[in-house]
Image (tube, rainbow, N blue to C red; front, side, top):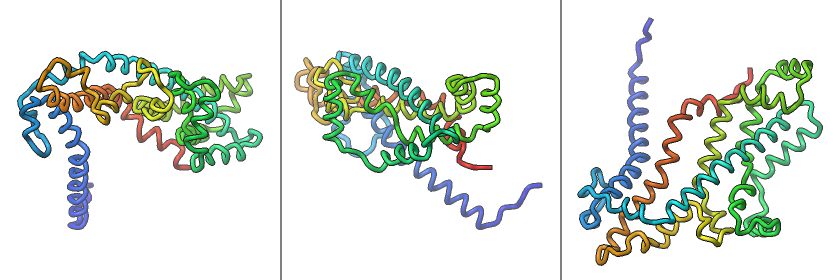
Length: 292
């Protein structure tokens, strides 16, 4: 039996739709502007103002210039290594930490949980962090971008909550059958919390893909730069000379569109990952949020 909507409910739905459409426009339009700008002719687009709805004179010169820059491919290689190795290491450490904190009978469980949560609100600061990384010998190494930031407290708490929602009877039955903690973790906990695990993996992957600040602090060799640090040099320091070399008077104009083309090149790969993990978002984060 269909329930008839009241006028107030219809107005509420209409207002919600308008607000959501406005939110979508605010989010999508800047991205679309960047894409249109990157495909535009440099001479024509510099003469226009405001947002672009369509490219101004379709041109691939900017992408051809990006393809000529060897730093872009070096940055891609370094970033892919950081994303793959960093995400795997972060997941392993997060799973082990979350498993320990989710065990009710573990000694000093509450004290350890408080110590972990404490790090979310207080930190030593950038200078002690830099000195610590330098003291352990990671300064100037690509591992300085992976190891110091391997665990996110927020992600570990989400994972701990998901593991705590797994019925204790399953762990008890596995223990009776002779399973140890590692067997319980990899054979029971991970399969039952794979939705949350997928979300956490995406969080770590996106964080590693977008990271540039630690690279700016610790790396000196340009061959180790991740893609985002190269992108920063292009956008902030206007370093487009290598890509727009040999273009004469049009060097500045091409350099402006190169910036937008580089943004697209650096952003599209990680955006392609979202559709495959989207179905896990709500389910993964909400696991353990409601107690029965």
